[in-house]
Length: 237
Ligand code: GLN
Image (cartoon, rainbow, N blue to C red; front, side, top):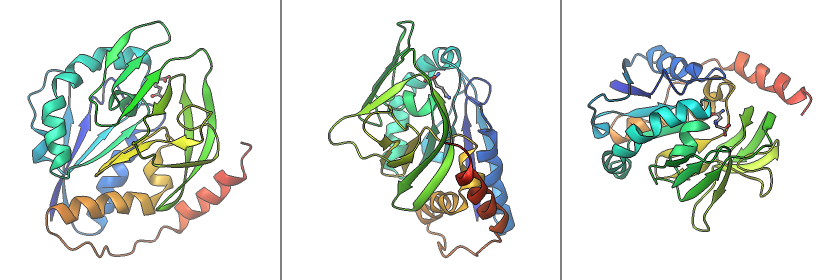
């Protein structure tokens, strides 16, 4: 099967190892014999998100978000259509914030959001930084967070998981990330996917299912990643 991976704003939103998420998606598909097309999307590019399979958007400085926000907001109707059609989105930190309703930076810039997640983010003077583990319906996910923005989900918005240790969305309500249809938002960098291969496979299964493919994925040797997670969990929190 051939799948397309779309990378949103690799120049502006791509920090703390986020690039590793793209590598992991590609590798796990290729190891199982699938063909992968990589499609970076830059500010101003003409693009129809309903045509792709998996979209990844990473984190960045507020500066990178300010640069990308208007371009992203213009794409909102097309992104909503892709979401309705079951395209898989993984949005980390800065992109997660921009997939909510709005992000007001600590210096008062009000950035429009795509409004996929019913959530608001506001910058703060405090930084929420460190190793994090969360409990999700796909098991535990580990990673690293570093953000000044605090995200608050509206009452009807599902979180991706609950914080086991770390801060998550705001350091207060123990919620971490958000989920809606095949769209995932999280503050987990690290990068997320190489450390959490079972979660990577969940994303791949959803993308393959949308194309009518076989979702019984061939098992891969994840023993090194599993050992790395055990080590990460022993680290100071
Ligand atoms: N600039 C945003 C914040 O600090 C996002 C940070 C990030 O993507 N790691 O909240």
